Image (tube, rainbow, N blue to C red; front, side):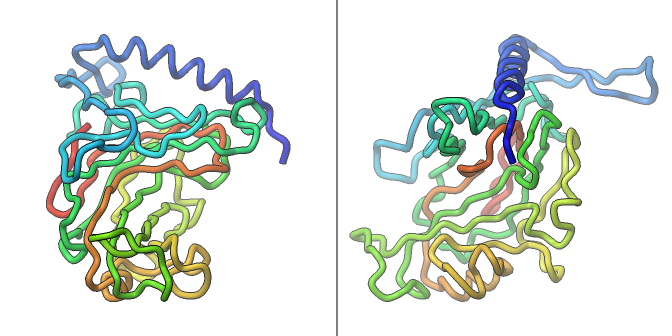
Length: 267
C-alpha cells in the first residue's frame, strides 16, 4: 500500500516540537474526577539514554539506543505521558515514512536496551511485563512496541550456529502484542495498555526466536516463554528492552514500567 510520506514527516515534526517542550516541564497533570479537576504528578528527571551499545564489558548500568538505525529515534520524555503510577516520562520511539529518504528502504529501526543483567541466567528472567501506548499518529497497521530479549548459550541452538567465544550461540526472543490472543484488534490507540509477556493463558505470553525459521518458536508460530526456557536451557542474558523493528514506518509509540528478572524500570 502506498504511503503518504508527508504524513510521517508532519507527525515526526509535531511530536518533536512537543517533546522539546515536555523536557522543560517540572510536573504534569492528568484528568481527575471531572472536567474541572486535575491531579498534579511530580515529574522526576527522565532516564538518560547513551548512544549505541556499551563499550565496556557488560553488565553495565543504564539504557542504550543500541541498534537504532537511519531516522529511527528514541527519547525519554513526557510527550505521550506515562501509565498511572509511573510519573510523567516514558520511552518514546519513532520511525519515519517509508517513502522519505533516508528511510526509502524501510530500514528505520529504534531500540532501547539495558545490559545490566548481562550474564544472568535465562531461568531467572521472569516474570516479564510492560506498559505500551501506540499514538494515533502511527500509520503502520499492526505494529506496537515490542520487547526483545537477547540470549547466549549452546542448548537448543541449531548445529553450526555462530559461536561468540565465552558466550555461545546467539538468539533474540521477540514479544509482539499483535501476536497475542486478541490480535491486532486488542491494540487501542492513545491508551496505555498492560502487556504480560509471561502470561500463561493459552494464546498469550507468546514469543518467537530469531534463530527459528519455521515451526514451533518461529515468527509464524510463537510459543510461551516456558517453551523457550526449556529449549534454551543453559542460556544467559544479553541485552533486553524495547524495539520497533524495520519495515514499520510512521510509528510513534511509548513504553514504561518494564519488569524483568525482579527489576521494574520507571523511565
